[in-house]
Amino acid sequence: MDLNRSRSVKLNDGHVMPVLGFGTLAPDDVPKSKSGEATKVAIDVGFRHFDAAYIYQNEKEVGKAIREKIADGTVKREDIFYTTKLWTTFCRPELVRPALERSLKALQLDYVDLFIIHLPIAMKPGEELMPKDANGDFILETVDLCSTWAAMEKCKDAGLTKSIGVSNFNHKQLEMILNKPGLKYKPVCNQVECHPYLNQSKLLEFCKSKDIVLVAYSALGSQKNPAWVERDSPSLLEEPVLNAIAKKHNRSPGQVALRFQLQRGVVVLVKSFNQKRIKENFEVFNFELTPEDMKAIEGLNRNFRYFKLPFAVGHPHYPFSEEY
Image 1 (cartoon, rainbow, N blue to C red):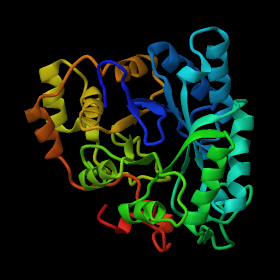
Image 2 (image 1 turned 135 degrees about the horizontal axis):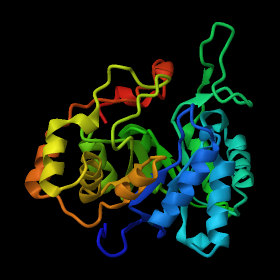
Image 3 (image 1 turned 120 degrees about the horizontal axis):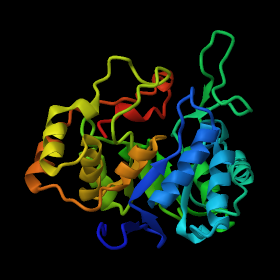
Image 4 (image 1 turned 60 degrees about the vertical axis):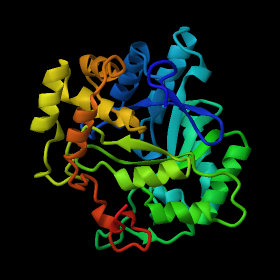
């Protein structure tokens, strides 16, 4: 991973991914238009990697922002690396391509750079994002993920996406895809929750051994959305060790947490809707953490997850019952 010159990493299919990405998920109380505004600010600041998903329900706004920045000459389409995700209600193989086409239509783009399976857990197909039964329980189903993957491969062959990958998969689920009979393309990445309290060192090692890039979400902890995250979760950015290292380098704790990931070969995503913070989050290439700093941050690991996906705990593909 070249942090100084190209600021990007080569994927196992030959395409290139910027090592720092901008997350477009907006909290429920933020209007969708803000995602578009923040995307434009991020492009102006220097971000070229944008992480989005069908479930975020704002691809229309984000796509419009990207197209406007292409139209005004700030960037070309090929400068932008755009990721979208296959939502759990589209895991059946026959629904995979229509799901991607739906995102492309909202974006008004001809292709995405990366299409990933959002979760290894399938839910009942249909227009409901989170389908529930009469008792208010989520309606889960079991789909053969290898057949989902074969449909992802066809999307790549059709030119609708340049690369394909997965998200929230454990090492056994990755092995299952890698050992799939007739595998045409390996996943280029596995996007997972990863931060100093959950540093994913074993999964990172496994992914590196298979030439799969680990992409970190919730790299600064979490905004504690009560729908997903328990209220009493620890605040990563208040961590004394991070703050001491930040003070030493005259940086923010957030910049230190991001730089930590970059130095260990992880592609890192960060989101903010605050103009000053967006700019600050991009300024992680002009300082370096010492080996002692890295060791101290690694020592913070406590295998703590903000996102536990409680609704899927009983599902046969629930990913977090494995150690990594």
